[in-house]
Length: 145
Image (cartoon, rainbow, N blue to C red):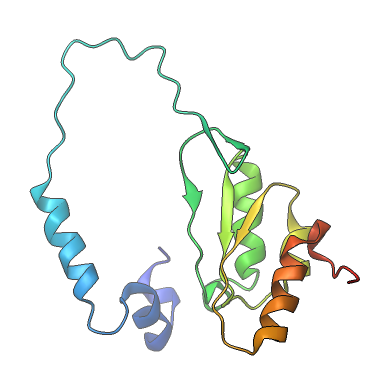
């Protein structure tokens, strides 16, 4: 997370805060302090392979970058920077929020790796269909129907 001094108060509150009553954030913090890992004493971990697949795409580690709306508040490149980071850590998949500043096409062109597009349905059916169509198109470009 960027240092507090680098962000305006309202942006810091957005980044550091949680949604609405922040109940889920409090519960997660509480549960994380109660959970303990069982240590594997004297186990050979020299040949552990954490790789796998997600939707047919290989993953080096079982991590997908979460969709983060409002990244443009923190860095001008926003979602474009997110998919570029996933590309550098390839194979890693970025989930891109529909609350992004960059267009689907800009995000698609930023990196060749697979991406997941999160969709908040805010418009009518035609608007939603258009976004889904654009997200499914190669490199995020609009397909003809």
